[in-house]
Length: 235
Image 1: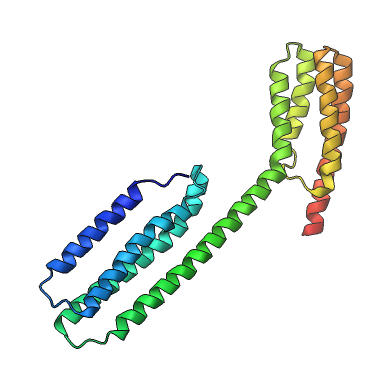
Image 2: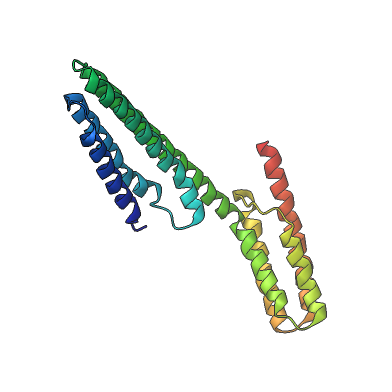
């Protein structure tokens, strides 16, 4: 997804505001002040690539929601680093002899924690999206089949034939939506019979449609039974 200009613009404004505040403060500009200033500026600048990582798959609302935890990690550590910087700047401005190693260690630890947090959040996001994809693949066949049966019955003028198609459409609708390797062959047979049903509908052959719908219903029942058995075995 194309990087939004808003994030860099906001980061630029925050950098300017923070620098103005730091330079305007009536305190001695010690090395601690400069280190803290750089630490905050880097944390602000880091929000640009972090937002890019968070929203790189943001083609829909769900992806953007999954990306928010990554953005949240970056913002939380930006807040923590800024808070520490303000404290160090104020103290060093009063206490001239202030240990330089202390803010350095604090900033390094915070940056390290932020990096680990971002990796963990990205890993979690990828895992959740993979599970979503697998779920969509598992329920895809039955959704497609239901959509096709629904479309077919809408285009039928003969009431008798329409009633047969409506019956199998409702049966598909209330069937187990999750497919698995155990039922792939049965689903292939099911779809093949549905193809024959469509041909019979085109021929306006009510007798043939009835017979094929009965065959379809039998295969669907067998498929659903296999799904139940597979779930019991997993449990």
